[in-house]
Amino acid sequence: MSSGKDKDNKDKEPAAAEAKNDHEDSDEEASGTSNFSLEFLGRYLATKLKIHGDDKPKEKILEEFTIDGIVSHINKNNCNNIIVMAGAGISTTAGIPDFRSPVSGLYHNLQKYNLPHPQAIFELSFFHENPRPFFELAKELYPGSFKPTICHYFVKLLNDKGMLLRHYTQNIDTLERVAGVPDEKLVEAHGTFNKGHCLACRKSYTQDWMKDKIFADDIPPICDDCPGVVKPDIVFFGENLPEKFHKSITTDFSKCDLLIIMGSSLTVQPFASLIDRAPDGCPRLLINREKAGHQSGLSLFGYGGGLEFDRESNVRDVCWLGDCDEGCLALAEKLGWGDELKELRKQEHERIDKDEGKTMKKDPKL
Ligand code: OAD
Ligand code: ZN
Image 1: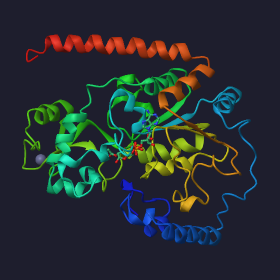
Image 2 (image 1 turned 90 degrees about the horizontal axis):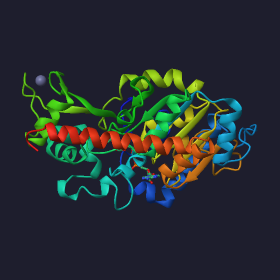
Image 3 (image 1 turned 90 degrees about the vertical axis):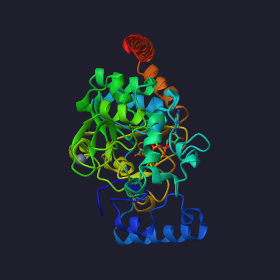
């Protein structure tokens, strides 16, 4: 299997990956019959491979499967190797749509681009054919006009308190950087708009260079040295994830003493499978509007993998359903940092507004 970004493909589980096709909203998924046969195949493979995720006797790791249980785990164990995994849901309250939410999700609002299917906008093969829809969308989503949310500042506070091992984000909006999460603590798994490259000669381009071209409607931006198209370093389906992702996951997860997952449907691989890298004794907290990462289909159809909060044998997973900002605030409050978090957001937003005001005054075009 390639290590490239894949919709619903299970990088770690070739059998699962081969059993499903590449389309996330495939009919196969909706069909009870094929779900049954996949389930059956999963059981068969689990038996053959001796993976008995559910019947393995395990020690209870959390006193209770709630935010209180997580807080007590943090306090008792002085957690200082927390890993956060984030998705588009941590930025929706900043005004950036996520991808898959019904009605508001980006993939439900791309009709104007006449795409063969919504995710084509982030597919390399389609981009080679027609790069314009991606750049039109980039104009709408360009970083710079949004402010970080409570979630981003919560991660910043975790770091300030020496508790953050790494923040893995699928987001390309750079709001973690704006919130002050340092580069060495950040893995931007799906790349960012920070830099770009010519797809033909690999010449590197700055964010400002690309922004000027895109906003001047000079679309697609063409390389200064050759006729190649310059694409921001966002990981498209069919492309490899950054080296930093592959390097960091090999050392980080074995040290992880708490995994917090927020604002992601956990449907895109290989990112989603990181949840299975946390050691057995490491609690995992999902903060999201809906359950994710728990269904069969993840990690060999749920056998020996995935979040276990719905299983009777659960010893360590917590699912907190609701708005990510509220979840982070609840956690911060129980840790005794609620006011600090609110104050940090207030001050940072004021600073950003002030800085933006200055930039606007300086810009002769405005
Ligand atoms: P999705 O849109 O798939 O999932 C976002 C999740 O966040 C959903 O489960 C929502 O219910 C939830 N959510 C949204 N707003 C929320 C809020 N305020 N509070 C709590 N939960 C909220 O986004 P990702 O999982 O990030 O790839 O998608 C993964 C990748 O798919 C993206 O990185 C993107 C896309 O193709 C790119 O390369 C651009
Ligand atoms: Zn070039």
